[in-house]
View 1 (cartoon, helix red, strand yellow):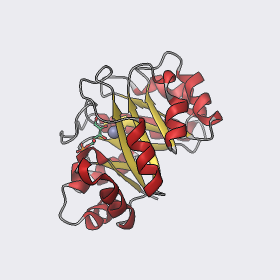
View 2 (tube, helix red, strand yellow):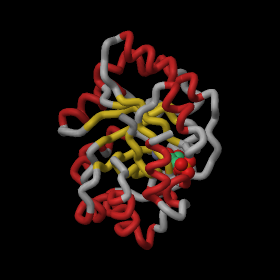
View 3 (cartoon, rainbow, N blue to C red):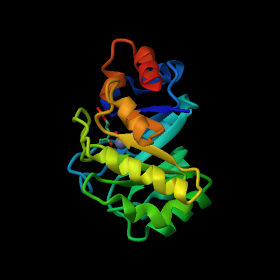
Length: 215
Ligand code: DX5
Ligand code: ZN
């Protein structure tokens, strides 16, 4: 089963509630919410108040991608704000194992992410604690970039390792995913596709979501 998680970073923030309800009706499995702090990445996006407000108007799974320094400071707040999946960056956390456990103890799905330059094997010892691993396919910080094809080799290695350990862990890819390259990401072993521009810049969002699922 392939899941699609449209990234709202590419949407019109003045119409956020409406855009999320559109993707929900259009068959999206979750909404990808990119939180950026201007420290871990140079860009800034949004935080708790936006997620809290959105939670009141949508029942879709909130897939919260934290691109923030020292994420351990804030996971309780994101859980309370309405996150269902909380993904933090390996490069930003001081104790990834402890943080994954903490997220699960809050009743949320726990995920860890690696930037393109980080070797994928750093997450191997953490896999039993993960519900999902996010393999970034662009440098985090901005939507609308082109996928770095080498990152899919990491997806392939990770899928083999998950199987070797006999686990069931989702692999998410994020950055530059579109109708054309989605099949490569899926063939490499990804089963959760994040797509910002490919969904929100499309004329027909439901058709764009369908095209990704059927890639
Ligand atoms: C980038 C974000 C992505 C981004 C994806 O740092 O993590 O989620 O919004 O946007 P596209 O699909 O346009 O690359
Ligand atoms: Zn993201």
